[in-house]
Image 1 (tube, rainbow, N blue to C red):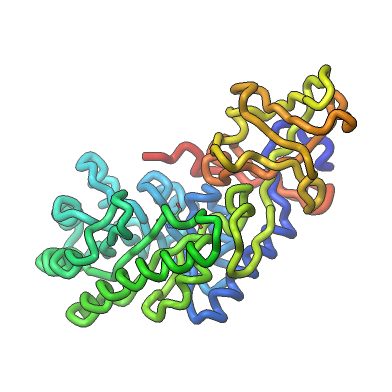
Image 2 (image 1 turned 90 degrees about the vertical axis):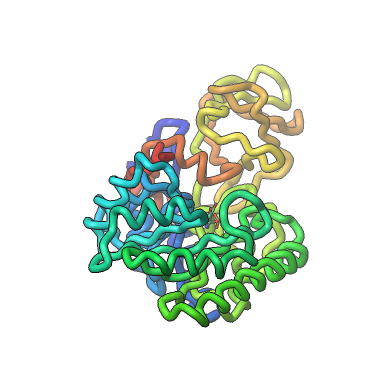
Length: 365
Ligand SMILES: Cc1ncc(COP(=O)(O)O)c(C=O)c1O
């Protein structure tokens, strides 16, 4: 099938750009002496997770939620770190059965309650592996840097658990526009995380992982000697939000697009397309961008103000658009936009070469 035969709006993935992104990140991590633990929360696709693993230099993948991990495991992926603490007692039995099913399940913890819960579904012979989530002064999850060692001592009381390491993910820094500011702030926080990790690793021989990092801070974070692996997510597909920030590391390419079409254009300088808020997740400050090949179309601006079904394009009145005209847009924020679709239509040049199901779609539990 040709790309021009796809219905709109559809989510398309440019295979050449996607494969380049995977190789660029792998080579970058290898050169820095770090491993990759790509985050599946971005793409929500076991097929992409498999390709990331096959591309090499990975220690496994990350999932944000238990339900994501369950779908990845059912698809045959067995090295999974769940990066958000699981606290709900009604989920504990499911963790127990996932732990029975796969080789290497790791969980992050930030409270004694989770530790006690996890210990209740493991045994000393078949322990559950945990990482301490430290809070990069963001307040979202994690224990304070200065409390991490005491928490490690608490975990050590449970023979049903093994303390594998420390996670520090500074989500609030990833999109700081100025590269030098972003890097400086991340280095400051990751050094604090590294110090916490060092003190724990000095007492607990099983503690050998210091993981964290997103696409935005990866260039700075790999310079921290203690970092063992990086949990990058968005780099594989990219989005308008990331493409707008200053790069200080390798450049990743806009592999993900919404294929859309013009449904009405009765006013000069305006067109209505079939991709509104139900097709492109709203991210203030980083609107979607129309792209031709690999070049953003200048002077065309998108707004969500036409609502659920309709996207609003504005352009100089000497330009024209026609009903039925097809356009590609780089989405604002890849993760939640991918979560709106059932599949990626995988294209090489103008040909659709595959369809990858977004099997983790809706896995928010
Ligand atoms: C814990 C954790 N690690 C890694 C990532 C990946 O970040 P990015 O998509 O910025 O590469 C995320 C994204 O939100 C995350 O929550």
